[in-house]
Amino acid sequence: MTQEFPVRLHGYGAIVVIRLPEPMGGGAKIYLRNIAKAKAAKIYHTPIETGISGRTDSGEEIPINTVGRWFFGVPGYMGHVRVSNWEGNLAQVEFPADSPSIVHELVDRLKEIVEGVRNDDTQDPRVVLERAMQLIQEKKSQKLQSRKKRHLPIRFNIWSPAGLVAMVGRVFESMLLPISTEISGALSRRLWS
Image (cartoon, rainbow, N blue to C red):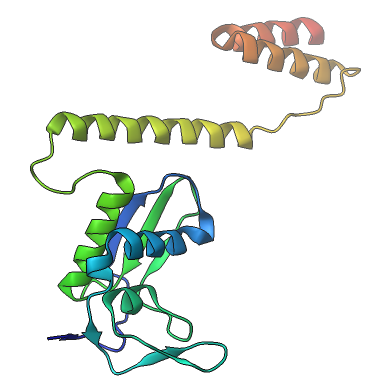
């Protein structure tokens, strides 16, 4: 017996973050759909009844008759998932919170498959802690990288006393951070006195 699904649910109340093998940008949704079709096929191809269909460019009907088609969409029917992957390899999967339970199962199974981690209470706490520490370290390195990108090189006019002091200060700052302020201040006082 096939389960009857709503034609359209509105709102994106459920959010699940899935760690992808690499950053994918706009291709993350297609990647997740292909993984679901291949490795979560039992859930993806579960028959449902909606009474609607999408259409190909040539006008052929594509019935929305499986959980996967309802969730990911087909040409002419956008589906019920929005996947964002614009920073790093974390994909934010958003879908209506009041989706049928089998849809939540599909998302949980996808996360399990893609991350290679089981989402149950029997998981070893050491593995969870190790994974959490990895995530923290990755976030720290991402923050450091973004900070480095924001510090663009400054051009100095070394022929002016202020430019020379600024340049020397930057050199000392990069080499000897703890004492650079002291040295730069001393050089500045000497040049300006």
